[in-house]
Picture 1 (cartoon, rainbow, N blue to C red):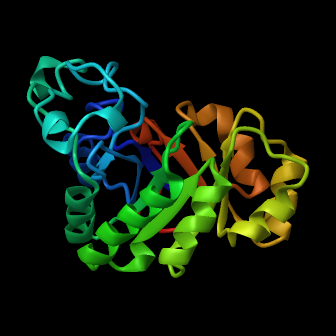
Picture 2: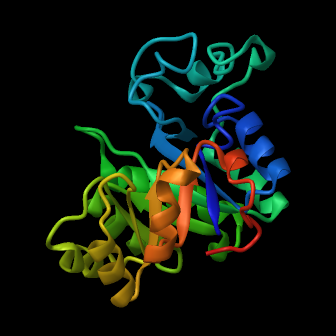
Picture 3: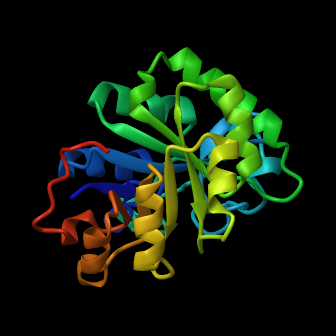
Length: 244
């Protein structure tokens, strides 16, 4: 049974922060999922939302704020005062952390309307290359097939996973176009037939965001390879040391 800590161990620490990543590592998770987008000055940073409003004490779109401005925000107090002063991490420092810890990182390329997808992929690829991290420690995922195709031009040796909420009927065409390694989908909409088909044509199958183990008991039997969860601690019988 393989688990990915969704945005770090985000049920016990503020999501997409170094505290959440360190907590996931301490817990024994071998996979951490993060979201990456660009600041106004094109620094890849780790944050999910299009704005900083929900998870910091600031306001505004990530793309409208500089790295310096983002760095000054408190990204921890919203979760608990214990994490006051936690900052939004850069992709570079996140890669350094997981590289040293020997864990694997699922980097979701986060795209919003009007984003420059090519620039996002170019800057992410530059930071990954500079980090000298083992490509086997990385997996890119995105809802944007364009982003996956673009990142493949820069880092062809890093695996890619297509994100969907519901599996489309033309899945094989899309997966071939992006050179996918894996399918990532919402466990609530996955059927046994779809799971069996995805596995039969040679792809890994990951499900998000499965926080109640009992709700996905059948999914493991269908061949699901990985659960992406906010609560790996609930999977008390899980073996989290094996990589996908």
